[in-house]
Length: 252
Image (cartoon, rainbow, N blue to C red; front, side, top):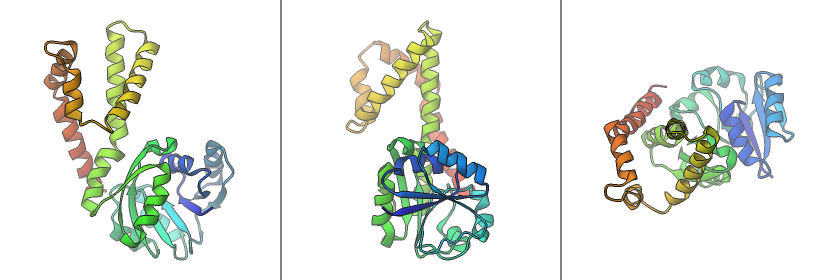
């Protein structure tokens, strides 16, 4: 199996690694061996572990999973030239990656936390010569979409990369609403999970507007609840959330 080298051992790295277990050999590089041991324990499978200082990336396939603010510092600690570098760093341009890391090819990717269960929506852009390999690799953790520009991946970051947090807020709020009306918490959570599980499949086949129209009967319960969401400017807030996240991505 091909070996994937993770530079960084945070939550995103762990989520992606969980999706790649059994499909690729995994090695991880970080600052502290204790944290690398914790990464291995959470992954529940043996991995090769290396400290960052002086690590040789020559010929390796890298998945860069450090914090955007640490790019320059991390780049200085590595030596050699990678075969391909795939970055999951929000808002970190190809130009900046090329400035601080030596590699034959560079690809920006933006997976999300669903990578850990093989259901990420990963967008990517970069060297087109590496498109097929990059999509095959990230396709092991879910769906992929190759975009034509870095502006597009920054927008996609605001949608798919940050999206799980938005949906988590909505899921929690809906469950809270059911509890407020008298449903037991555990029952409200079970109903909410079932709702999102089914919706996730429906939305693959049906346009959101058609889904809404199919549920909303005249003068019915859905119409009353939907009107409340519109009165609360939920639609505008979602649009603004993507705009604010995109702006932040361009500032990083």
